Amino acid sequence: MDYVFISYSHSDSPYVRRLAASFEERRIPVWIDERIDYGTEWPNEIERQLDGCSALVLIMTPSARSSTWVQNELARATRKKKQVFPLLLDGDEPWLSVEALQYVDVRNGTLPSNSFFERFTAVPARSRGEKTLIYEADFSLESVHWTEGTSPIYKTFRRGDCYHIRTPVGKHERYHYTGFQLSDFCATVDAQIIPTNDTRAQCGIVFRFATSDSDDYYRFSISRNGEYALHVTQADEWTTIVDYTKNENVRTTGEFNTLAVKVQRSSIHLESNGVLLRTIDDYRLPAGQVGLFVASMTDGLCAEARFRQFRLHSLEE
Image (cartoon, rainbow, N blue to C red; front, side, top):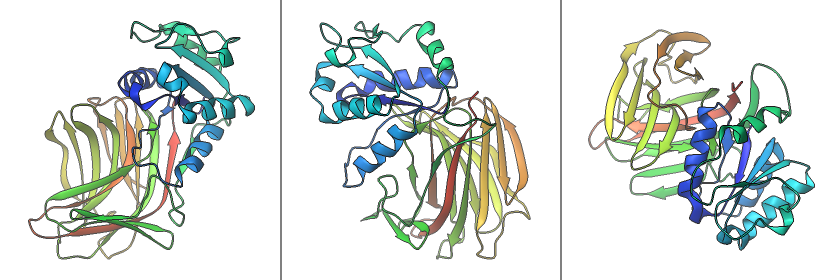
């Protein structure tokens, strides 16, 4: 299948994050709304993700019942003939709007049994094939994921078909990511480091990004001097998996580099400009979001990069 859309009230976020992780453990991709700053573009993004999903999981609680967002999501999913899977997390009984559907009682806060997740194997995907395109960024248009903004530690803006991320302070990274929770995927993007006073500036792809008590993620980076590397941060501990390695397939002439990360279970493939750089076996982080980042590596200096043609394919079985 493509991916599952989880409709819920933000007051139920802790449970939803656990649920999303359980889907990913079974290699079923999910999309959840974790955005706090709702802008004018957000309803359009919700609409796109609802229309693109294969099924909707409804988290029923009193706060969700009173949420206009949740009610509208359920109504649209029903109208679009999406399969709906209700979970009763809190409340006396299931909602009238889904009375005819089989629901799962999770009012003790436990996750559904394996039989619940097995039901999703019968949900048809919108398209077939080894890779299923589930996200493509159009940086020429306003998006909730790729907002324009300025603060003392970063600046983001769109110019033409590119999205720029700038960090004006030294030794700082800035990342932006989509709402997809994925385990197995392929991400590609054209990335170009803009010359600044930080000759060690980096940019690239962050993936399996999970937020709990700390931000845990892998980071595939390239630098201005033609190096690439892979790091992982977990529980605020930074670990080098692939140390900075110079490679002729990482361009240093100010051109775009087409970067790709292909991840299937513990296998991580890193590519630049169509050439495989390295294959690594690592499974410290099993699932999470995918995004883009820029990092300044020198005190007092800034870094900037621009990105275009960011695509995300699901490789879930």
